[in-house]
Length: 200
Image (cartoon, helix red, strand yellow):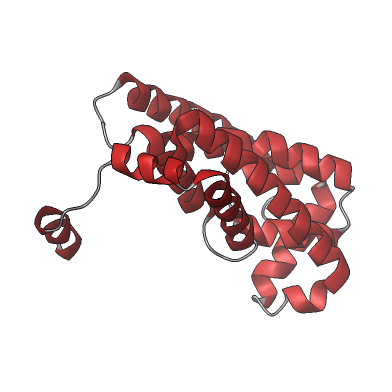
């Protein structure tokens, strides 16, 4: 309620003004945003919020070209961080979630990474570090991550780019696509659950 009142009372810039500001920041501003995106993705900050911000600042195409590669780079950095630091550092997050993530990823490898990327059953950053600890082959990890995050990232970028006009066809198409991909992912998870891969 307070947020709504603040928006009504304050002179909050619109999307066009925000994008004009991002453009005025030039290449330096773009590099800074990418660095912030990658850095925050290494932490528990939701990558979805960063993707929405990218869409708001740079539009759908620009935001997608920033968000997807940045998330993949951050995922790769965290992967090697997990391999270097090992399980002991990861367990500080929480013994049960960390052990469950490492066990699942170690057992299913590429398929596990692809599944939790399509349907975020585990935090993005936890999967990154856990994959390194589990010793998943790096090429399979990068491929599964690149494929798995694409639908969600594009969806969140589109929300940032088009969400200010909920009656636009772009926003409607985005919601439809995200829903369709979510249903496909949910079906995949259901199959894994029936086989016992997600519950063991």
